[in-house]
Amino acid sequence: FFFLVPSCPRAARGAAMADRVREVMESMVPELEDVQRRGLCSASEVKALVRRRERFEYLVHRPRATRDDFLRYLQLEINFEALLKCRRRRLGMTRQGPPDFAIRRRIHFIFSRAARRFKGDERLWMQWIDFAERRKADKRLERIYGRALAVLPHSVPLWTRAAAWEFEARSNASAARRLLQRALRANRGSRELWLAYFRFELIFAERVQRRRSALGLDGGAGAADGDDVAAGSMADGEEAVGEAVGEDDGEDGGGLEVGDEDEDEDGGAAGLAPAPMTDVEGAEGGELGGGSAATSAVARYVYESAVAAMPEDVELRLGCLRACGEVEAGAPIQAAIETSLRDSFGESAAVAVALASLPLDRCAAEPEWGSAHAAALRAALQSLDASLAAAPSARLRDACVAWVETVTQREGLPPATVVRMRKKGLQLCKAAHAAGEASPSVYQRWAALHFAAALSAADVSGLLPDASEPEAALAWRQLGGSDGAHDGALQLALSACEAGAIRHPQDASLACMRLRLLLARCGERPTLSDLAHLRDPFHEVASALRGTPGALCVWRGGVRGGSSAA
Image (cartoon, rainbow, N blue to C red; front, side):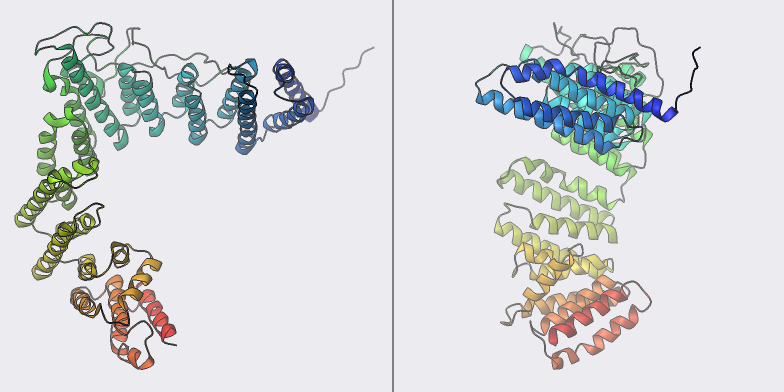
């Protein structure tokens, strides 16, 4: 008689886990024997490696395995790969052998199991992609991107990185375009994706123009034999960028495919089916369009579609405008974007400053200051003056003063230009104060500009509203030197703060700046008699800010001043 005794479920799971670990460990035998036979590792080192691998295999096979277990296991294998590389170089073995490829397959195998266990971990997928890119494993990368995008369809960094890999590493523009279109269908409200798609079309149009110039083609249509290049027509662009989704005809020109996430133990893709897709190109390997206007037509439509999807996003339009300045093919679209910005956001201070500073930003690639920089700076100042004359506002004046202050801290700026820009900043602050449209930050920058001629840029940065507490404290101490060299600048800055305190009595940062300037006027080591003169201003500010969060800053400044005197 045979009696069937039911086994314990926990014991059964443990036995199954042990069998899987034993199977994985037995698969390592050939590579370990080859490593030992080639003299890359000794027998004791192989035994130690086997023990560590077995321990990690049990850890990652646990039902509650953590992400750190997989990462430590991966670090072990990556370190072992680096060790073999160093020893192979030392022994004069130039060619890679079976152990090297086996270790890489094992690392991908561990990544695959970790990604299956933690599907929603975007950082883990990125680490796997980084490793595959460093090893130039293009076929493996194609499968990794397919799996990652299948489980994380709303990950914008994954979509943009996959498209950039197709376009830059594999020179497959059509596959990159399809990826960006799929990404926008899943994330239509993503500014980063719209900007990436717009920039891609601009770069693609520029490459088409350069190829036409190299081939000597005229304005008519010419064939591009063997090139994966096509100029998209406006009708095809409307079908691709719009919301309608068509069906593929089976000839999609290659590229990675997004489908199911399931994958076998060797890391091979299983059941990756292409999703419905329409292409913005007319035909694969088709004819080159004529002229820059034809090649940039798709980019123009992408911009119009982005604006229609996100009509209130100012940064989206500004990003497209900056992208046009980076690529020559964006010149035909730039004027239309600027007109769109002025029509839709004519009263926006950020738009006015961005449009004015655009010529100067384009000169950032040239480190040395030249005539082009000077002309761009003059054009920017004229544009800002025109905006202030047309529609003055407190936000616009604040943005203009902040931009001027940023320009003065630009590296490589001639000293004469720095002096002129500081004078321009002072004029803007005075005009804002006279018009009654000066914000608290304008008064603070006004005070900082008075010290700009006497202090370095690092010292003046402590006077700005966004400066950290140590920087600000350092600036106050340097301003209150015992030699009295800064008395004139200190008095002018104090006058600016007092004018701001009258206009904005409830602003805590401006009140603290005023008190610190008064304290700095007393010298580096103020006496009790010096601090007695600060009693009335201190109580005046404290009473004005009573019950507000800024009162803490004022009392902290008073305690710091009293402790310095003591």
